Image (cartoon, rainbow, N blue to C red; front, side, top):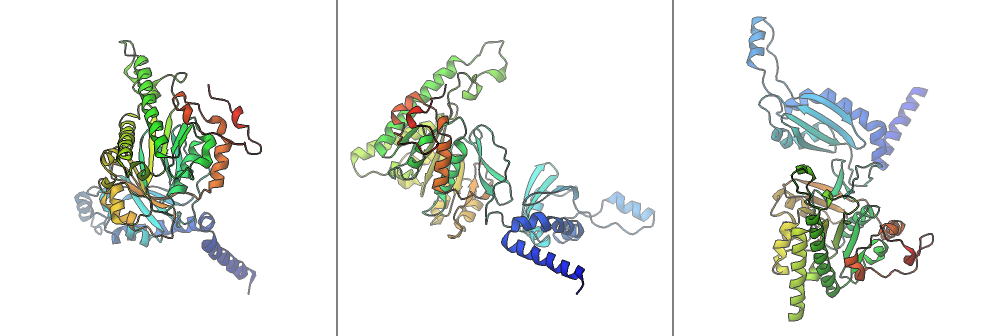
Length: 450
């Protein structure tokens, strides 16, 4: 056996081992080159087999007849760009006359099989231009977030999409969101990722955890206010409504609607205010909304109505005041009582982890995307953390958040505890902090932001 043969065998064995144990490493070392060659070589025949070609135009047929040449064949969409990524390939196509982006989207599964890729997702960039994002391996099996992400104020990365792109939670674009999921579906890990991503930012975190605080109170050093029972939650929510009214008065006072002020500078929300006077934005996390809506007596029913009324007001009016809602629960249907469907209508962002029945999936996506409902009920029990994320436009994606343990989330919150703002309206709900961990400043010495 020659040295060249031995080397070839070793390379093939290494490639096979990497593909089995470390698919991301295999893709970056061997897979990306092989996939690009495969796409370029097979492109014409694959497009023809998938029905994505158009017959030659009349002038080309006439020119062939005049010059006594063979009739030209059908033409496939023109390749504008083929770009490798850390998870797959991005193929940008210019459609021919008579073709539609829907035709390419409908053929995505056939393209996946023909190009031997793990997944193919299609989206229209602009009129006549379609982008195919192809993944070389299952990126959701072992989630690895990229080292660099496009984070901005109130826009944080929380998960990875099945096409390899990052899923962001953008509060300024989608102010309020609903997250559903059965027990052990990964809902808590998603919430931890959200808190960990928000911790380094200039934002006030407000938590309502009626499970006696077992989920959110370990992260208390980064929270400006916390409630662990419905009675405290009611007082906290009504204080937020009062704070919201005060913010609106500030915006009114600083609206700058004189004739010499350009339209773009007229203040309509907190982001139009000068940074020196801008109130800190607030993210309200409700861990289990059903605990706020259930009641067993007349007194509890009155409390429940006031809680839901406050939540609806915050959902309807909170965006301009910089108050954003993250509502989590196992179910969120009309059986929770009056006002629930009105609240759900205000929650633009929708995320559903594994659910126990189709009705629960309909609560999240039934009014925006039937396809997302079908995808949600097909999530297997063994893939904890896998979820369907959608919005009111009807678009949806499969996502999975990286696993973040409670200890990791606690460490991040403790590290950024000095960034916890002191909101006067919520001062009485500020969690009482115990002894500081080793290397962290003492609780009483934490400076309040200017």
